[in-house]
Image (cartoon, rainbow, N blue to C red):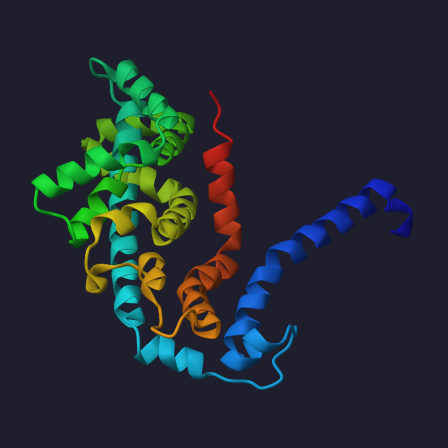
Length: 275
């Protein structure tokens, strides 16, 4: 076994360990800072609390709207994930399995949308939400985030790989298109759907720009936006700010650790699309 270890493998291992430490250290520093009393945070540089103090977490829970922001983030992220998967699955199925005029043009439009950054659309989206009276509402947060072209393409690539004989046999049995999609094709792609749902949920939870623009009251803010509103009249309170940030990031961190294989699969699916 030892004979198989090459210098390149050792270098790769060292590089991986360095990269892992570089990724983990900011999280460790945030947790350590949040557990220190404020005088210790500003008075000395230490990598371990000399006195453990959880008052910052009590502040985050009881003196801010963190619980409300959690509810908003969970609710909007779940709805965005469900709508994105439903729309993308049906669009991918139509582009892959159905024959209709303009199908190729529509597929090219979906591909072309990759070249348009979401930040370039926020002005027009905000104007549209304002005209519909949806500013500072869940609908205003959710609707502009429900179209994710890469999810459509991933589903289309999967449906292209399914033997057409399955669909033809289902048609002979009298199944409609929705029955074929949800009763035949969906059970075949549970793994893809699970992976895409996790990565979509994480993306919607971490989204900052659009919720920041479309919400005007603290009661409607999501976690990523709400933590920017945590302040103190006496200046910056580093321990409190770190405690709020740690609690805001904890659900996504736990979800990633639990479903990391699915997240990796989703990233590979979204970045390894064949032409």
